[in-house]
Length: 193
Image (cartoon, rainbow, N blue to C red; front, side):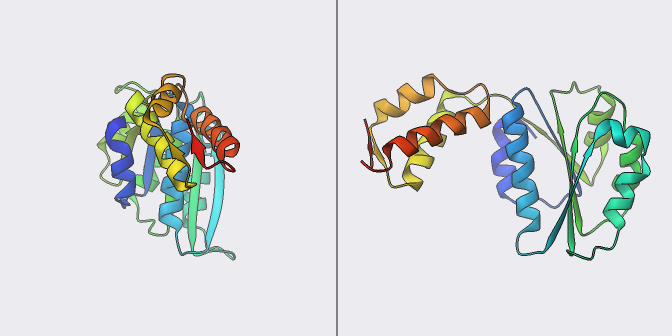
């Protein structure tokens, strides 16, 4: 899934077991992975697991054990994997070839070339999706700013949005943090000029 199509794809609440979210915008990678897990776990009691890729490379059975375990605390499992330096595709094989209906796995990774072993495995699977995350365009940032300000009922001038968006955008989490500061500063006056 191309970066510019990803938000629409995620909003459609796709039904895959595994998502590889990768790209040079690490903040956007984290945001999209979290949104996928939230969407999948809505109105369910959820149990969360976190793994590092290197941990799965050393113990490939950990992932399928976690995905198939019976939980005492929830009927749905979210598993997040932070990419490592070692190849852990072996850990994903039982997941991609099996039936794990009450589980979602998100893998957060840096930019991966199309011939990277992990990306090739995910792209070839019918039960997984690969989502690219590259820095927002100025129009994306402007929409994000306007959306956050409108959410807090803060009126704004278009010029203020243009000025903001020209100074933000290399990392989604940093952009959101800066917008949050502006919202906090403008919350009492309810206007941004």
